Image (tube, rainbow, N blue to C red):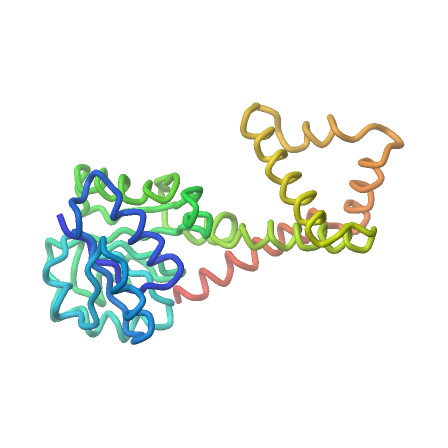
Length: 266
């Protein structure tokens, strides 16, 4: 089995690197294509996959094709792919907003998987939501899922609406965490901590809180109640967040990402 990754940006390269270590694939069965001369030069220094500049040299050889380009490049890319693709190939897209129907019609194929990964895939801690077209067989889907899991975990969803929703929660979600971390680090600096101490205090707090959450069945609200005592410091912080409507603002931000994903698909 050969896999082609189109686009060597953050996510494309992450998947290429991760899949090259998969037991499903033999050595050098991962191909990667990009149109940036600088990127191609750096990719050719990596020994465990083959690098290409032209679609016609690699696309016909592939069994699975990962499309990892920006959504606004999809029309031009699909026009170039269409004459080279065959109906037995499976296309896996990680482009936000580009629907299964759009891909099937643009490429004139049936077997398509739409997926939404996130940035922690780079460290093997990603989460990818995915949905296949009905023409993808159960055995083919097991192979796809195994390859998606090389970057962390994956969940199959029941409709494409959940792919757009995943964009708002997990796809864009790491940025929300970084936003909160940045705010806490700035507060720590203002309180007099050094830049390094501020980073350690905040990163370890997030890491520890997530580990506590993952090792129990308690909800975030239950954990907040465990930490916050009446009249105490944590309660003062949580009350301030409630007074400033932070809870609703976070939900609005997630919906803004969701709405944009839907808009991209129109």
